[in-house]
Amino acid sequence: MMTPAFSSYGKLDPLVGYYLATPLFAVADLGFGVSIRVAGLDEPWHRGLYYAAAFGCGALCRLHPPATPWVGMGESSASLLLLLLSILLPIWAMPDAVMSGGEIALPYDMASLGNALICGTALVAAFHRSRARIEQPPG
Image (cartoon, rainbow, N blue to C red; front, side, top):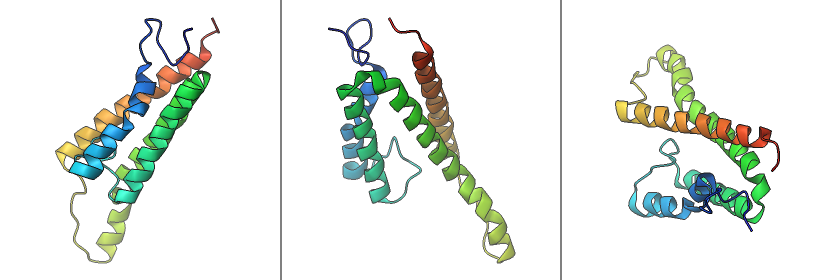
């Protein structure tokens, strides 16, 4: 029996696969220092919390496939908010640094901006893909 967690070809839905692959990303990040998914989170416990939540999203999608598009919309919205805050908070802190006479440095390099652009694009696309799946008539 085919479930919404699987595509019409019987392959795992890419969103569900992304969530279920979270332990691989967590090992790469926490074990080897290669942060692919959560480059904007500095604290290891923040990254661990994110990885646990993402894997929980995958488990929920796998156990209750009709929830997959709703989980995708919620997770992509929350991740987009975190991405925007990781960009905006250093910018918003600059006036305080100027007023206190502190040193002003650019908070980003080209690699981090490129990563934010790629991640943001993927998150917006995931949101709209999930929204479109919710709006589809059943069947």
